[in-house]
Length: 249
Image (spheres, rainbow, N blue to C red):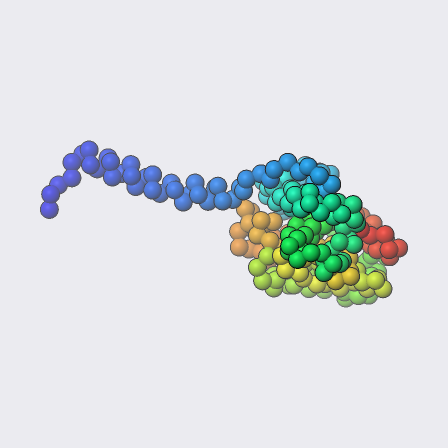
């Protein structure tokens, strides 16, 4: 067999090193999607009331930045694009639009369902989290959890189990019916309980973009850790609004 020259050995080594670097570069690019274009129109991205790193170590700063500034921003930008030729979407209440999707023209229904649903879900999501979260609620909210969901321990276990069973992308919610009853429900993709005549009291995003940078495929670990970010005061405020019929998204 012919021997390899020193020059050929260095050339082969360099090629192998370059080849080995490709998957890592490709993964890094895939993990950080391009930022959404600046949103101009009636829909706006709500700013976070806390820094990106405020929920660490439970949710890392990079995930929060990408999730809020890119994923949620993309839903807002897409809705503003649709609103250019459908200005009624920008003046209607979000709850009214999502609660009456069948009234929309077929050419925009799918886009509105996904993007306005995503906007509503994420607006709720940022609101109910915050630094120093965790623990448990008090007062009327705790009484409702005890009555309708079997107490805090059962509620959290059932909620985590439902989130773990959700196949693919979606959400796990605590919904509030018109009679005030609480229930644990899941929805695929960016569907919202509003589409079924209910409201989301609280919910956790189980799309991979919500946790994959830190937890990879360990969704159950993310679901358990997420409780440490819940701002029960905000959830209680939403519960009070739901009981008076003033809860928005």
